[in-house]
Image (cartoon, rainbow, N blue to C red; front, side, top):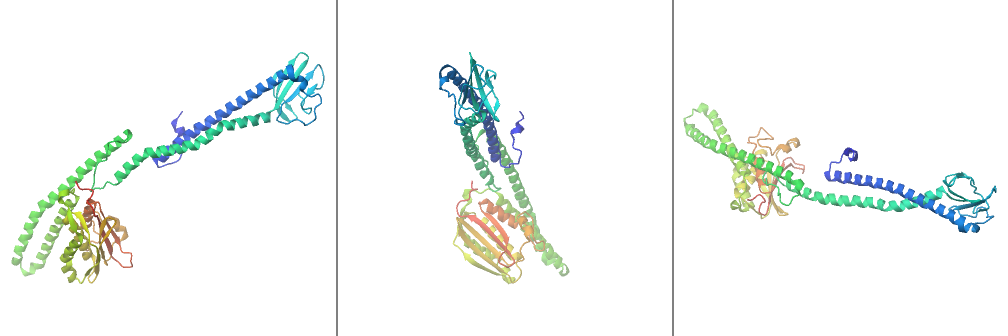
Length: 452
């Protein structure tokens, strides 16, 4: 038989639900078939038992109890469920003895079992002829069917109770079986570019081992690819940094020899060199942020002190543009990290706020501790970012506003560093009725899980 016959013809996206439904329907189908078979067997068994009873009664009446059957019974005195007994003698037109005078069968009925219709009711009749006498014993078919039905219900009741119990057992067994797969899925979901660790293969079910082996192979290839990319960025940045630095020094030395009419063009050249040097610094930071942490590099970093140092660095630029930088809340917090990483995160967030805030604007800083995490929050009142562009702001080299100078790597670096420590970075538009951005970097208080 085609196995597709048993397959549910509807979409169940959950593999465990599909297995539960398929197994449940299969067992229910077999239970129905078993019930039908039991019904048929019970019907035949009851019929055979009742037929045997009819023949036994007829034999006893003929041999022993014939005189016990009344000659003139009262009409309707017999219960409809009882057997009807008729005794014929000689050529009499009416039975000599009878238990119910309203029921008359053909005395010349074939010997054995027949199914006549008398008084608009079907009967099961057993006719036993003997020397000069005929004994007939009959029972209503409706009574026999009711007795068979009661017997069948008794036979089917365990099956009817068993079907829900089997469904429940299937649900429990399948869920327990898939628990290991769900745990494996949770482990896979926890993997991110900062923690590309292979899945544990020990103790897994045989069916899951090919999947885990293939997944671990993919992780190894991905780690190699990311490491190759990181090394390329780092090597390229290092190789370009020296000639650009030399070029910048040469330009500074040439400045006094440039004619006054060419000074503006020369300053543009210097700014271009400075932008390229800044881009190389960002690329080096990005390569470092993608590298794996070593436990020997970690130390307890005073986050408020780092915030104070960064604000001191950008304060001259903010003062020149009349931007007010203040702190609403500064919790005493330390994180187990590399100080340079925390400094880069704070400097990029505060630097972005200064860059995108208009002259005369405000920037509010906040450091909070909650649920074993430290949050560094920077709120500006700049123009904000279009909601359609927010999902792309962490893409490398993406700039939401091309009119403002930048490399498009700042937030990518911040996100890479946060992921490296098992933290996260959130950037959303303000919802308090003012324009601007709320940028929050979150670090765990304890040792980061990516440390090796």
